[in-house]
Image: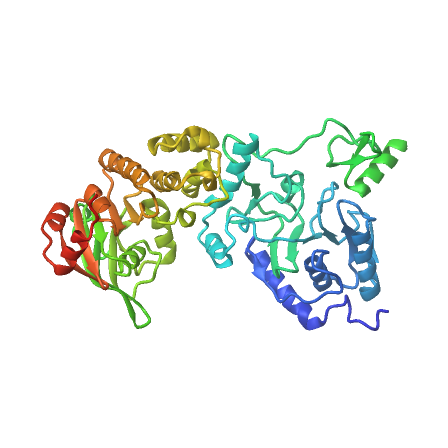
Length: 279
Length: 263
């Protein structure tokens, strides 16, 4: 198959253009850089933005990990890994420390990232201000002039309705004390992992054709009020498989009589934790 | 900013040779006037006379064709027509208020009343929920809206309440000047009376400076100290409110005054 397509599917000109946008995005942390998004052989919403970034970044010696909902073996994750195995002939892995590029939709791995690694996020809605201000030229100006009061209105509404900030994923964060960005649909549980992370974080929105980035060791602060500080969700349960109490847990309904199970959303971390216990 | 005399001798607002053309159509032309601190002026005239165009130019919502709008802001005596957009927006969100006829333009209809009042506070850097809430509550009381309605959407409010909420949302940051574009239009007479009542109280209590655009001469008389009469984009007559309404000089003004309905 490899000889039919260019290395990693995309043509070299497109990859060059995307790399230029990535460099610009890294130079202005949190700023949304427009790019000429290409048609990819999968529908919008399935990770066209992330897959284009990954295609532009891949070299022959890269090792790719793809996660979807924290899991290494869901359809989307397996298909994207297969896609790059076929078109680029690169090595794929489920192990976070071994991977050089990690493409993800919903999670940042529980295993801490290292310098030199690149996280690629598939972003559905790159504009955090969109729900408050639907006019694009206006949101561009709000970013340019750092008018972020409206962003707090959303949090205000949360507290006035529910007595706490209920936004649980895609929680807006300010990068490098300047631009407010939408950290894709990761749970707010993962927001602190972006702060001063040694890895590069790249965000690609295929439909909206925007790229933004967090360079290594950059401050990332989740928005909050002085009297309602940013809080992480906690669980009463521990993981039913590995017993972890520190990870993000998924609630799984096991029958129609109300039985449920809490398990790690990061399957790789859960596996390692289980084998650790056994030995 | 422009080598002018000392700031305290300057008016709050100086409109100089202001013109606005929509292509070949004249919006307003060669408008000159000044507004002192604590003064309320009314701009009256029939529909299409250029009142709203003039107000939108002053508010920075429209680009002017010619002329200047000098505003005595805390950043200096600045021409809003030529200053950079960043400065203009900073002034607009902290030092001027704009109340429109159509409250759905001035309010965010999908956000609670408290959120609407709080937005300007948050835009100016307030990050304490409890404090924002307390101030919003005080303002709801000031404009005579039941504080129980604080978390309700403005779309569930009556027209008069929406207008009073708009006024609260503008006054919350203590702006130096407030611009009103037909605030009482579309409200029935008793609701109008209440709005005017609230406005009069605010004007005297807070020493507000205000430009009021209206086609309703009764409202203009009740609120404003001075009046400007506009016709076909130009100011044709100006003076003290009572003087103009009781003893109009221009035939057009005479016509306007005589066409007020008397029950």
